[in-house]
Each structure stands twice: as structure tokens, then as C-alpha cells.
Image 1 (cartoon, one colour):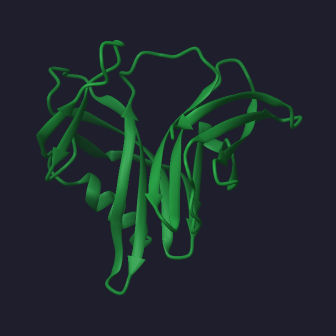
Image 2 (tube, rainbow, N blue to C red):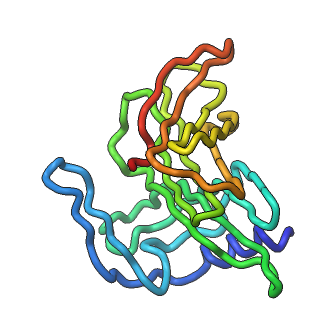
Length: 193
């Protein structure tokens, strides 16, 4: 197995962490975000891990991975489906985990045409990824348009998009969704300014 992928598997094998703090998103009914340290907010079932998509640039790789697991603060006895984006970087010591973010399958379904995207970066790097939510429509590719003029495209293979670059991306970032004919179908802000 490729060592960059092994870093992802090793990260998923870590025991759950502990909650450091909770971030509320206000009274809008959106879920509270729990920030953990020392591990994830779940215990992954490694037998269910599936690498759905990969993108690479320079000495960085971005993966979209699905797996089943158990949220460690949940009373659920059945496994929950997770979709997670992992960024792995290579340095003088080999491959290491740089960042990870994702979603659980127990979120309420949305019937909007959108990309459920997370991401971020540093002054000279950017990565983002997530699921394409396009019930009943055949969305073929997604374009990210950044405030500084950077434009990134990805196909929707596997129902997900991944973006990775060695360039600076300034927010706000807008996602544009296109069908197989190349027709612009929808746009929305994915990373606010």
C-alpha cells in the first residue's frame, strides 16, 4: 500500500479524542460543532474504509474517504456513515497528516443543489473537498472561483469534489455547478470571506 494512504489509515485507527470545546452556530437550528483533541470524535471501523477519490500536487495529497464508525458521544448502537477529507504532506521525514475534515451520514438530508464543502489553507496553499448534493440532476463538474481570481475545477466522480493547489486562495469562494452539456446550473458561496 502507498505510504500516503497508510498515513490516512493510521490516523483513522487512533482512539477517539476528548472534547476540548463546543462551538455553537447560533439559534438557527444548525448542529453544535465539537472540537476534539488527541483523536477524532469517532471510532472508525477500518474494515469499511474506502478511498473514493484522490488528487495530488507537488508533495501533497488529498483524499476523500468513506467509512463506518461510531461517534464516541452518541448513544447510537448502529454504525454511522462518515465522509472525510484528508490532506497528507510529504516532508524530509516522510508522509504525515496535515488536516482532516468531514461529515457524518446522520445529518438531515438537504434537497438543495449545492456542494457541502470544507477546506482551508495557508498563504501559499489551499485544499477543499466534499460531497455534491444534486438530487435528480446530473452535475458533471464543479468550479471554485476565489476572490483573488483563482479558479479550480474538478469532476464529480464518486459524488465528490477535491481541490488542491500550491496557490493562494482568497475568500469568499463560490462554487459553480455544471451539467454534462457544460451548462451552468447553480452557484453558491462555500467559503465565506
